Image 1 (cartoon, rainbow, N blue to C red):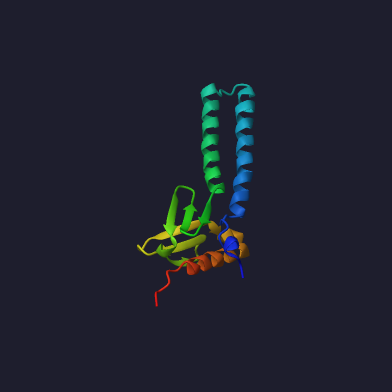
Image 2: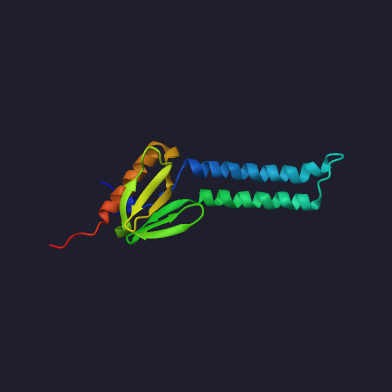
Length: 151
């Protein structure tokens, strides 16, 4: 049986983080190559504004990759804080009705008591058996924190 500390450790994707890191390195290398080498091509007009635009685009791509690499879900005694690419949301355990990881879903979906669903991108199908184990761990946490009936 897992201890409470083991159950409450953060959820993080594996494959998405590695891909984000690799693409970040390639983005920096590619942008530097374009900024440094293209202006040296004879007869090719690549102005400082073009170089700045290339750097700006690389920064936007790096920000998106940083957000993807930072996807996680942090459980604590009060609830679950889900950080996806665009937004971060905290839900109390009592708000979570079900944990779904159906065959067509790329990541875990939480059914919430208000009728909404919340994607948990920290548990991604691309991680295979690890993702299935993490989905079970999340479902265990939800069950562990279910309100108990008095009496």
